Length: 402
Ligand code: AMP
Ligand code: MG
Image (tube, rainbow, N blue to C red; front, top):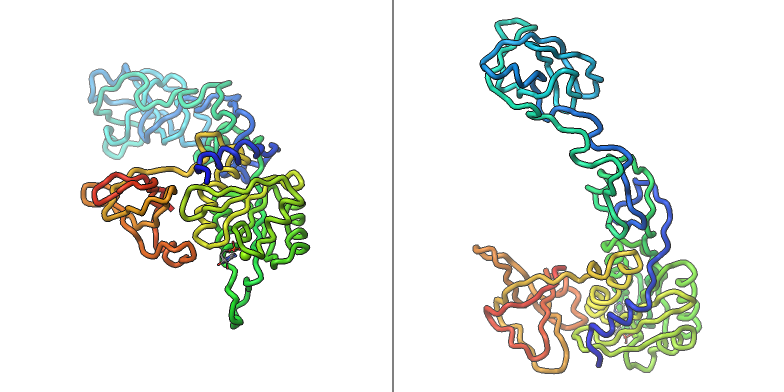
């Protein structure tokens, strides 16, 4: 058995970041930028008001309350061509340009219209120059780099790129990930199963995990335990996709032809990893495309995806080495998470809750068998319990939130 970090390092050494191309901003969410985004303009582009109120000269408010002449109204989107002189004010709405001559805004709550008069206002507060004025370039200076290469495009960053007029961005494309299942026992039908058959769950789960991770899933179907069929589906996958995930056929069974076929058509490494579940794992390159051979048991294939395939795929998508996951969160064990020493790190399915002091507490969520998918779906997290660690009641434990 090899430690998990060694298997992970092997994957990360061999995968390559996908090429970049130009994307419309509307398609960029979740992608990783390949080039910096630079603003050619200052943001804000012009001095404007942060409040609804009156634009005026701060000097005029010194003896407040003071009465001023209202010389116009400026809304957001107006050019604001009003001029404000001494003893004057302009009614102004949030976002509207500060008119010439004015240097401050008094919010409407600190003013009063003088009985019915449209053109006189009583200002009840003394303000300093710049009060409630958003200065040009206060958020972004002209020529400033607002996003660096390697940045993930989040909703806020989509907005920021729109703000600076970057409607096209250079980004690494989203990995297209083919998913195939292997096994003579697998059926994909709602109808009755014959004895010995089970329904294919891994392909659905893995396509879900792929989509949730922000990649594009490609359903490659089921290969029965037949070398020619397995080979055909892998080649279909490598022709259409940036990476292929298969499940099953990587352990020690007589009909595990995936191993035979992949060894013939690819450059594979077969690993036994010191973790439970998900001990068997294969990784290699077929037709120039990374192939992840995940174990067949449903819980194992999910755990293997989280710990090995997803970090590799994230690296391909352009995420930096510190941003590949999984993310560990500190929790406290609420019960006994101990296991017999077997040389493996156990990923224990746990239910998580916050106690009244805000501490995250975890306890076993039920069956821990690697075939028990229902129990897995009742878990909120995987507790990482190193070999032989007692992890008893009240002990700190790292968890991966699901
Ligand atoms: P294998 O590694 O192919 O021997 O599979 C190990 C276990 O996982 C067996 O019990 C298989 O029936 C089961 N298994 C393999 N592939 C799938 C799948 N796609 N969906 C559900 N169970 C599977
Ligand atoms: Mg099998």
